[in-house]
Amino acid sequence: MSRPHIISSQLLSQFRTLRYGMSTRKGGTSPEPFGMNLSFRVGDDRKCVEENRRRFFGSLGVDPQRLAVPHQCHSDNILFVTHPGEYDSCDGLLTIAPNLPLVITVADCLPVVLFDSGKGVLGHVHAGWRGTAASIVRKAVTMMSNDFGSSPGTMVAYLGPSAGVCCYEVGEEVADRFLPSQLETRDGKLFLDLKKANMDQLLECGLQLRNIEVSTFCTICTPELFHSYRRNRDKSGRMMAVVNIVGNEAV
Image (cartoon, rainbow, N blue to C red; front, side):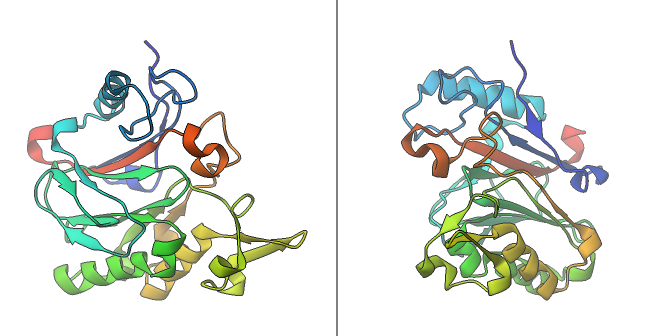
């Protein structure tokens, strides 16, 4: 049995109480083009997806029955959660509960982890261009500050693999929602730097550059490793990023 290939974070791995991983398209049981697909909603065989999830979450020591999963809708809605389950119409979750893994589904949009180790507050955000334009990451930091007393200056953030500025072509209607410094123009085409746009929000909120890690992976131009809806459309699987505060019973 092949093992799932998992993306980790050097920054997040420094915290003993935190467990993080993001799946790729490698190590799954689904027929191509799905491979390690973790979504039930893309036409993949359900039994294959269940086995893929068992392999991925099991490799991280995460109980797949205890997940908190947002039904992502490209919004700026963020919920505070204390129990496992599926949460409608939101793109971010916050928690202070141990052993409650927060999951984001990925196929080009940016997964962002926020963590305040001092207060024990964890956030996981799905930031596509719509959510980014609506400042969902800024909203998450503000909620952590206002509701839990977190200080942005001591928070850490990890921006995972997503569509990169090398490949993320957008139209003028999208580009107009972003600053010129968050765009590149090549051969008369506009390309969005989604990671920089979210990094700018974090820095403006008061996070320190040394406390932010940004993945260099682009999901679009790394087909051997990542699913990409932009690249493959309806033939694309989905990855998942999961982050969990490890409680005593899981240590």
